[in-house]
Image 1: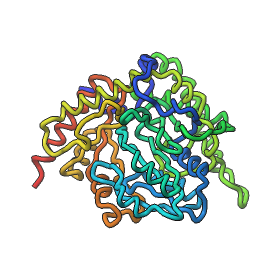
Image 2: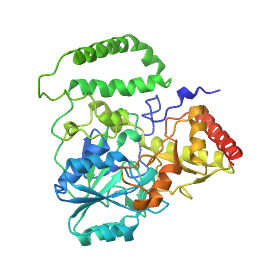
Image 3: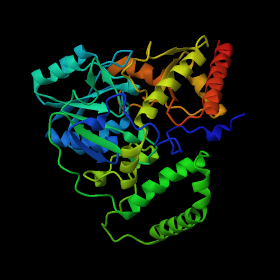
Image 4: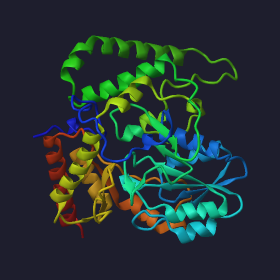
Length: 402
């Protein structure tokens, strides 16, 4: 039986990472203007700054969201206004139109779970009201809809490359409409080392690259000892009164935090992450995710207690995860967690104040939706174990339901 600890929830480096160099779907970084930064949320802040968002302005954000989307708006001194979404995650354009008007400087629109949305009507609304459009492609690094590439409808688009590539940190700000200056500075030697070692250690922890792991065993042990010693010294040393704490070696996005640290604005993604993006096999990435999505869909067909969020996988989609809607989400969560199944509960924690009175669909999605991994680095045995574990949990949950 496959060891559940060896099932990576995110892509990890493997010998196959750099196979299949061609591209079969448009990618965000195909845009004529691109900045490689450390995370999608940093890119949001930079996009809002480029649009001139500042104190007194309002920014419309989907009520179904990651809480990490909100602090960049507050960093600019602006107010967040949430607009409703439909049960399939598409924007409620009627609600959005009611909230557009004077004071709204920008609108954020999200392509959820790797499924490109049709943004033509939203683009027209923004243009008619003088609002900028920020296309949130954090879930959608690759894709197109009706011949329109993801990232090309907005004034600016942001991506989260670490959701699709085996890297420790990384995001991007792109534009098909505006020039972007070069990102002026890197994150420093400590950041560069942490980004490379973080990606390698994640791979080693999942049983990948065993020869390289053996070769680096001693240096990695020394690194851990030095790192622990440095942290202990930092804690023991009293800070000067009024002194700011030293910046972290890596952005908080790399440890699943929702925080926004302005220290990382205008800083390049690491050399290691940029090198992986340049050399990774993109055809393998897209084809693998699509194949694994369809394979999991077939494996769960006929199982009780769930429905797919989307009726079909469009030809222009490269899924981030497999989103399913559970009939008994609380009980299913406990069974999946006990089995060691990796999952994403996107929207389970919405920004304070976003409740059913703001958008009932967003609350229902956050409660019922489970995102299961379908990334390109999952091995056949891992995928078979995952499908069997999820199906068993669905059957047992439905059988135990009152």
